[in-house]
Length: 171
Image (cartoon, rainbow, N blue to C red):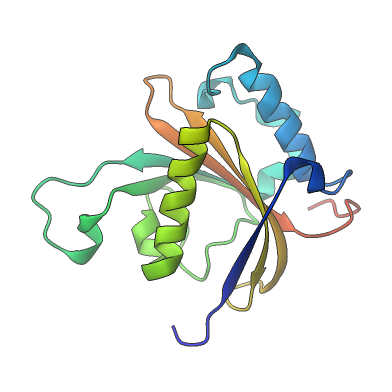
């Protein structure tokens, strides 16, 4: 869509606002990863991070379908497994089973695929300040992308994208 802009400025963990719920989620993720492996979705207890839940999306890796010829089948994909009520869908219909390629295309899609691959390769979350001038809620956001795996080892990613505020927001 012409004129749509998204700006992702990488930030470090220590640049997260002190009282922001994303910092709480990060601490919880690090506790789960303390054993040296990536946390599993099955180990994730939502009661430990209630302020982040409305903003969370869980995606699972979906390999390229064999024999598909359409444009969206040319890339590996991720499928939505879980999403919070306040999650941004960038104007697309966000529901369980929706593919990332149904929500994004072009540069926006490639940015997310690269980011998801990077968190799994690094085995560490990535953070950014994000500015959107389109979608259901344009504005300033803080975003965390966290690597997880399923019990059988399939790569999963939790994306927590919340308003960039001082921590006084309750959801």
